[in-house]
Length: 411
Image (cartoon, rainbow, N blue to C red; front, side):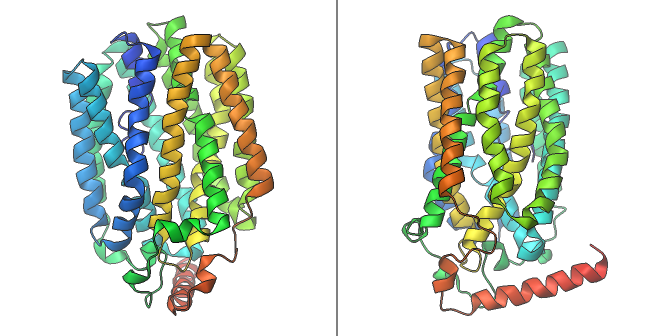
């Protein structure tokens, strides 16, 4: 699912600029739409995943729709068809991350979650790296439209992979962060989640991270396209390949390092953001721009693992894991959309250097907020402590059994 859930991701930005000759502000609006739609659907999508036992089928249906959206981009050149396709991407991609995280938790439990999420993210980044290699070659030697056809093929392969997962291996109570005795009706709403200060400040920090980070790579792609239109897809692919290659190893490390605390690991990702944006602001050489993406590999590799673990920490024992994922991803989606719109406006009126400096300033603010306001979440006492039901104990018991079985199997 690595390269599927974003609906061709950053390549759409370069495609619209270099092939369709769109203006930066139009591109910013289209790129922002998935995030705007995700703001509305992420919380209910999380609540649905908490309740449903058809998590695998949600991934299948989502992949079919993403494939159709890629096809729509190929056959339609107008603003509105592309806008509609990206709105559908925003509606559907909200399913991927929480569904896979839920299935993972339902299979391994909390005690093995950090190592398994690290492993998940390593494979995720490996998939992105391989996809970027193929997309770069397709865009350079065939056509940019070929990248969208390749994404359709990926959707088909994802559907096949989903059916390899055995339904009987998924504990759906554990998959929503609950124990066997916790009832579905105990799942709290958004208001209850946000009444917890730790959850609120964590959500704000995640939004600030994406407000700074989301527009950086699309802007870099546009900058490369203006410097060397013919080879822009190769430069962009090289940047993604290098970053994703780093992420494969960083994600594995993050899963292990997180056992000694989440915050200090994620703080590194926050601090790298403003540094990376400032470097992009004042450098035009496409080879150097490509190399700077190594910093994104470190930051994103850490973020992808630790953010999920912190959400699991904050919702442990409540039966609210996927709902909380939805709330946090909704805030992140809002930030992604605002980032694209803000960057498009600033670049159009003041140029690319000022656009990157603006994003760097937001990244610095987010780093300070995370450092001084967000608490360490490993073993934190959160809302589950006020839950009077016996689900928490049941979940812990089940985690212990799973850990013993894993130790016996040598995992």
